[in-house]
Length: 257
Image 1 (spheres, helix red, strand yellow):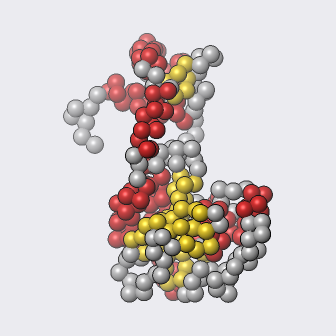
Image 2 (cartoon, one colour; image 1 turned 180 degrees about the vertical axis):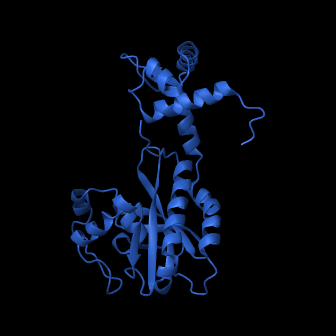
Image 3 (cartoon, one colour; image 1 turned 135 degrees about the horizontal axis):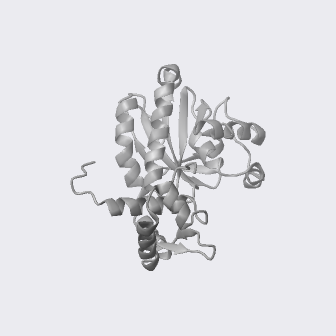
């Protein structure tokens, strides 16, 4: 970025806000001074100003948290945040690189609701359009959505709800579904192979908000015979797409102190 008109003091404030946001109740003035390499007198003035403006709050133990003003500004931003528009913008480059259909969904009970779609140039058109629903257990995006639940909650959610088969490969028990869901912890994504539609495989990743909650999911769908050819690039691109949308939804990637 062009730094011709850069203001160093604002850069320092940005670093202060970010470290306090990531580690509330952990940093005192001396800790911030050491980690951010800002001398204590300058840092004191910055923190005092931020505290007066209610951007940060000094707690009884002299540690800092974000202040009321940051919450108000965040709420104002997110009240205007349009996830679908963001998907539509961000998915363009993903579709260009993969030349495959990319979709966006939210969870509705035990179903996923398709809310947006960007198509590649394949002559084989998917019969899933915005407004349609499919059983969550049979889709990659659905499994991603369901990963926000511990197994006990999953059992409660599906109490009295049969896992209906859409194909001969659709998962048919909660135990097997849970085994699939658990793969997201290691991979950050979930593959589904011909469980929703014969001949197609689907890869999905989660969209997260500022509270690290899964609020939506994105996916790319491939003909099963393209899996080997496109697996690696599909995984990279769908994770990148999910990350870009998540960051705009307020998600803060975890960082080690």
